[in-house]
Image (tube, rainbow, N blue to C red; front, side, top):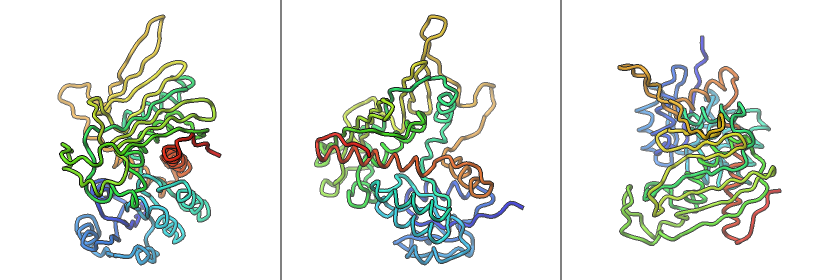
Length: 362
């Protein structure tokens, strides 16, 4: 009989309610038995919707961690608390799925990495975009050597007017940054993963607070309050890897540009290149038989009239792979060492923007 995995949710806000808990609820061998939030009502609502009948609710996550029957903890809190909650959970003998980004800076992320190594417990970070069909296809092609030596890439996370105005997204203290650490992190993760390159040499970064004080914003989530908007509205990075490869990172919640896309990468190699579009469209280009070509693989599963291939949910695939890693020992999709490198680069871009100088990685 398949083992039932008992899970505790720490942080029952938007990302837990829209991604983690619905995905876990679909898995037959998972029970959500504990819910914690600093607003007790949110924990109670989460229990009612996703929990077992005898699930417990908490305001203090340390009380939840005392339950020795809990196998796994999902950390879905604001960025500032990712590190210390994750470390405490690992030390309490729990496997941990922590929502992205790994932490607000590299020092805090390293504490998480060290705790996982010290305790022998599994730790992964919520980069569900790796589970998209276009991302998996691109990664498989890269691993097969289709692109050759990938020496240039562009990681893109650009929104025109979509600043998240709920929660603490625009609070620098709680989040550690704005669009760079929020959505830029997904684009950078996809890019590094596709390239299989996790050795940065140096980076140069710029951040902008150009739109924070605007009031008539046309923001899709409603006007933001200028006095609360303390993070950057846009950030850009130029990253050079140890092998000479270059990555350009673009991130913004609100940029005056119509050609926007999010969690996408463009790669250029010695044999071929590829670029992602929104809506899961992937285009590969190269040269064959003395001619240039562009091709788009059919990733929607549609090829037979009247046949529905069914829906595909990257968040569910992420949860499924994560639980399999725990129950069956299959490899995790996102390794903590990889997420740590993403955090190091994000921190480097922020530091370069502050100093006006290149940031060198030791």
